[in-house]
Length: 217
Length: 255
Image (cartoon, rainbow over the protein chains, first blue to last red):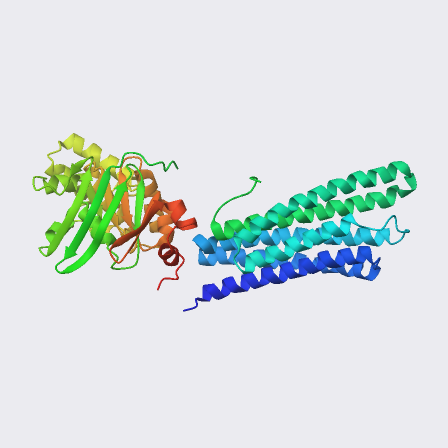
């Protein structure tokens, strides 16, 4: 027997999935806008951020309604409370993607500083994290979520490496400062995306195992 | 709330119970913590009320009953043939689903048990007042103590029954669905009261209302088909139960 409540929970999950696929797309497109120097795509990512903002509000409204009207317990309670947190993290990832897109548009006004190597690598790891975190959520795989958390270290390491490298660019040639700073901030945006994906992974472990693993790795 | 496990006040072990040929409880083992509220939940016919009634030997009233296993209170076996059942029921009071005040005055209802015990008049008045205060009813009835208890509202009658139960200073108060006939306001008052009363007494409550168990108990036991499926802190049972049957029941997906 399927309960009406189960249908409502399924709809909530669908909303979150739609939100996360849109987030994943925004991150991918913001990087494409940067690498291919595509202004139009950068504008699109910026505009899509409004959609993500609206979705976040919708998810939260749904969750609050379910909390008030259904008084969920146990697994249901964990799903609804974590859905609110996951939607917040997804929305933040969307914000970071929009930031990357805006910075890409600024960079497009100047000649290329250098061929990008580390930023695309960071972006690739981040996109993989978002994709897998989605799988961990849909297929109820907390172990996959745990594995995602480990990958954040690679993102952090690449970010540090990039900050050093770009600093030396700026020291050697002050003419590169504007562009190097923009790239530094893009790397920083990606590093934040990794953090939010990590948060979601932790939320998924709590959702499926009722274990709070935050601040323990 | 500190839910560390200390020395229990009531210990039940290997309890089996039959109504005639039908076995209603199977191998129940359970320790009740003093000055805490323990909730028994589970679908109708799961044995939770039967177990509650074992604790003050209310089931003795049923000729067809048969019981095995031990129940101790403060380490003393309450099933021993030498136990004075009247004395036991004084120490283990009970509040029922439907309020059942005697057709007497408010004062006499609360004084009833005390008079049987032979309390003196001054003492009697003090105890009636303190019991009504503890039952959060004093302010509403202090000017009409001689009126019939039946003139009170349903919620007030139930609080009167609680006052009557606690007047004789029991150690344990058993409550069998105490709010099922009350409106939400009266229910909220009883639930508040339960939280206050556990300072003085150990409370065991049977409830069909899951939210009631979450709001007012420290420990929860889930019963199904005469077995205790899971027993843990209320917080644990309602956020992350260990057993799938428990989870299915509390999330409304049973069967």
